[in-house]
Image (tube, rainbow, N blue to C red):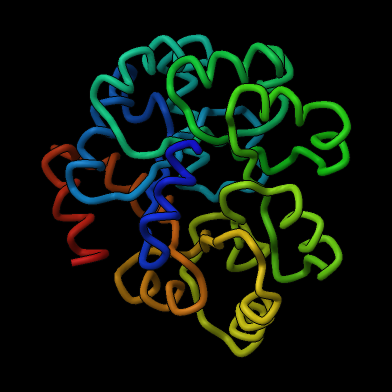
Length: 256
């Protein structure tokens, strides 16, 4: 049982995850930010590794990726930074990014290195289910890594059931099929989508992402899922002066 499984076994509602981009706003800040987020009350974290063509990311996360790449961030550098992760951070950590840089690094090598530094799961939005199941699942399983699948309002019940069967920690529910950074608006169609997921009684917990920006949207998401993920709004904070001093207030403002 990895840290993610232990977390969901001990707490199944109002879970708060934070996303940020490794290498933004500067190199060698990844573990500092992760440590500050844990101390402030985040339940688990998603650390994004930058890519030059982030198709699902909105302007804020795209900008952070561009800056991170300019700063020299790469998977090699990220794993070097994360070597001290588990001496300072205890909560579950996921890496999130696109398939291309993982393939360039080597998927088996990537999974081994992720496990070595204490990563608990991986989110790869553009990794097809078929490829994961037939080509790569053993790399994840052998290294104790959870592969996190994404579901959108357009995902069929058949595909959701398939994802539920392949998952072993949680399922990432996108609040919409748009890019990151848009505020969550609980329209009738979105609410029906959430209710449809709840009615399916999936075996895995669900976490909602995209458009979660404040305490109100976080609370709305938690009405239908086990928790929610905040990304773009936190990444914006990292672009401000004295951002480390503002992290605690940010988390307390989301979940007092």
